[in-house]
Length: 291
Image (cartoon, rainbow, N blue to C red):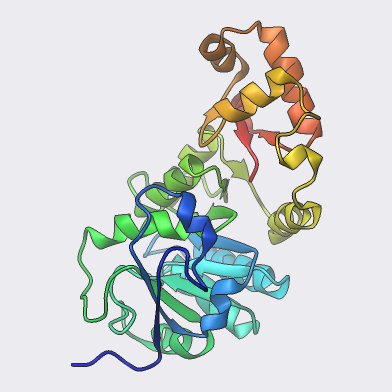
């Protein structure tokens, strides 16, 4: 069966290739796009991911964040899985915003098939590294998660079990130097264990879409100023620590031991970086580099 004529294939360095993907691990050889092709050039992007079997709370929060981010002009990215992913996509579409789904199958065989897939093929964008005709395979989904995070400034995890594919996406995001946000849940609910685990590891706790909108649009508005190009405005110690935080979260003692610096020297440099908007301090005193 021939693939639909509305597909576009893009390769690294070509027109419409997302430059963010050129810096990730295992850069795909090509991408297939279907739907509103122009959305591949839209920024900023934020991913919303989570469990396939959410609680009513989780599904409502995914829709709330998807709707408000879309209304703010942010492209909502997810994996089109049932549950949290589809709730975020549907809310963004209902709000008249932009949304993009990264698939674990070909864009001409979107999985799971259904109403959301049909809507995304018309009003959103389907994206895959798998050539037309490729059916979904279990190992495709963890692999595609690096593209979900790689395309975005950050990833929000809404609900996730202790062992969840969403945590893989969050770890890809951290390794790629992206923001990782997590929504807290009930302490006695199994679907809170994954998000609470991320919070203990240094993810930023969010309660409102406005927190992400402010952080993302503030970063975009700031642009690549003197503090963002790692130029001479930063001290030598600050530049060293900024490089050490690439794709990691670390506390003062870890950084001092790793770099052979005094704790006070590290702390002063971190304060400098925090004031410059280059790092953020998370729970447990863990610092992370801002995109």
